[in-house]
Length: 164
Ligand SMILES: [Zn+2]
Image 1 (tube, rainbow, N blue to C red):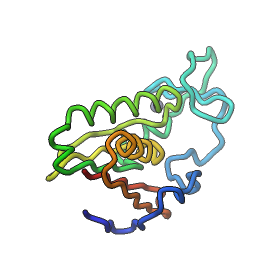
Image 2: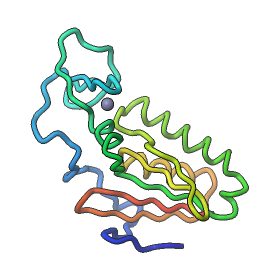
Image 3: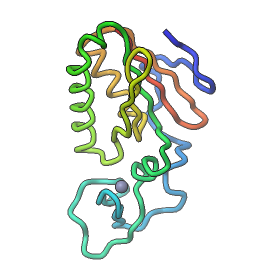
């Protein structure tokens, strides 16, 4: 298993920081409330992005998730690989998408950006490190296997490696 990524340190799963302190995609200024993302329609209200009906009077600014998608700059990377993955690819991808749906329904900033084929499996990129972790946990919970986290604290990026 590949365990080293430039700029990333292995981290115990229960030690992963909860707060994104240095996230380059958090607004530099305090957002007006309400603000609507012109791209996805998420509404910034009471200090967080939510799925709400569009308010009559709202500022417009792209949400951090759409911004990352626009820039093609993921926060989370999940690789899933191995013989078991190959045999059950469709089923595992279904689980991954369910996990995204569940997370995104509550948190508009948790989205999958891309799912691409790699040598031995797939790489999933996400707009949020906690979704990457959630996908890793969901795979591990359902199918066991090996699960590792590698965290880049400076840029607040997470790589999740699942293999079975
Ligand atoms: Zn948006």
